[in-house]
Image (cartoon, rainbow, N blue to C red; front, side, top):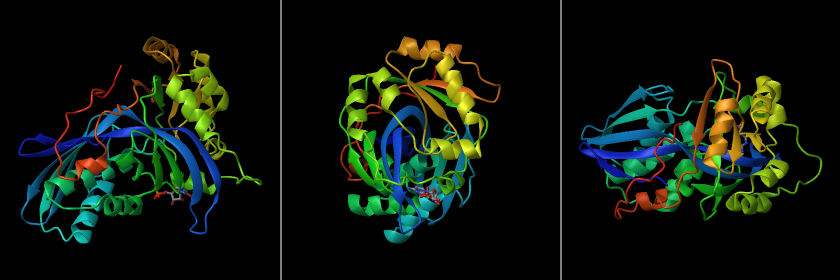
Length: 321
Ligand code: C5P
């Protein structure tokens, strides 16, 4: 999924957003995190990371805002990924990184996590490090619960607190109408308001996979669940309104992604997706994107780090309408 390519004396990689097609919260863990089961799919809205190596060991980060913004300092997960790689792999080189930011933060789209995974893959290659997949996966999990997915996507079942991934083969024949509202939702706050089930839940994830890979959107609309929705609605009440707007525009399968605040509709054809995107009534602060699933014919992050041959860039582009 994270395909590294040459760029202006250095390397570049695209870092896609994700949606949680469905998400179940199975319980609370002793470490305070929640035990999840989620079907996660990367989509064709992507940030881009470009990097060149330097000899001084310093990390420099520039953020180019292209529809979204992010801090250009140590609080950015890209910076923390670079520092982690330097310290755990005793890497002496530094880097100049440019992050072209298109995925808005705090919307459940995993943009910061994807950037972090992309930085791990890009800098391992740039610095010529021999990092094992296991070591890279451990660094990803330490950076954040969603980061490991971006090394194993573009379609996977996520379990544990997010670090246990089971990749799913295939390219779902669906299109995604993504509504990104002007407000964000704090992941930590949403999880703090989750009401845990009294009995063990049946997640339904295998049924979701079957329907998704067959493009059965109406069936998905009847079976998909995001257990974080009531908690997110308690934090940002407008999420119910956003979902209602998509349904009113003709969508049969509407859900929130992750801990919100973005919501999406799945459509069986591109023309159906575009007609929902045109009809949906939103306030001036919201943005709508018509996206495709990220193609599975791009190499996984693991391969991106193994000094193997680069494969060419995926065909999805940024999928804007
Ligand atoms: O791992 P990450 O720092 O991205 O998680 C942000 C917050 O989301 C955590 O501090 C925790 O409150 C919550 N979380 C959780 N269970 C998960 C993932 C995240 O409770 N599986």
